[in-house]
Length: 317
Ligand code: TXA
Ligand code: MG
Image (spheres, rainbow, N blue to C red):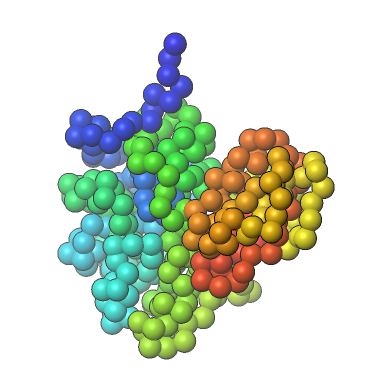
């Protein structure tokens, strides 16, 4: 019998070479990162980048994050500034994305940046992805490896469930360490968080020595991609619920909840990092079990709880 997961490859030297060869041929591959799994392609090639948009069914006006190995590579494409250096030194490589001004002579495909004058850039921490980036002579455009507006993938199997045989190589590095997308911070003027993540406003404020605001609810959508409805399981959701009916899925947090078939606990220990790691896996599980309604208990709005609530709010739209 054919292995239905034949596209999911374990990481060894042979498979890494194969993956690198695919990227050099302007093909796409599924890659692990510390945040969520991504769909990677050559960011200097419009041919490769176009494949990303088409496969994800992503609107062309929603720009991609460009992933780099080091500063030397980055300098060719964007203008760096003091705030960037401070945050880079403290948090990179890691789950933070910086929006910076694009250089005129940048080789980035205009499609990857949705023709904007800014670029979102990130240095991922995942060791396998860093090995790949190191051996390439171009950066990678890597959005989350899900169809546009769907739940982001946190395992190689999730990526397979999104794209089946359209992605020929998915490198398997087990479940993602963090489980939520990177923090996106705009550094082109007064620093603003555009998408909350593991690295929160308090951590960033300390490094920059100023108060940092979160801008995701602004009426002016700064990034074309800060779409209101996102991360969606395609099932109606009710947030801040105290209880749920037996035929509804109930997502809870903390040990005061009973163990029932329809109760999905993000963290018995009331640990927000654990809850973040379990969130997308749980939403996908509930979707696969064909529930018609999801209720969610209140989640504390502190630390990575801010990012969890941001994703829940968008998923519920
Ligand atoms: O953790 C992550 O960042 C993951 C992993 C795979 O690295 N990637 C990811 O990419 O979440 P994606 O495409 O799913 O989300 C990218 C976000 C979008 O909301 C997009 O609008 C925003 O970054 N973005 C990209 N370029 C931008 C720009 N120039 N200005 C503002 N926002 C930008
Ligand atoms: Mg995404």
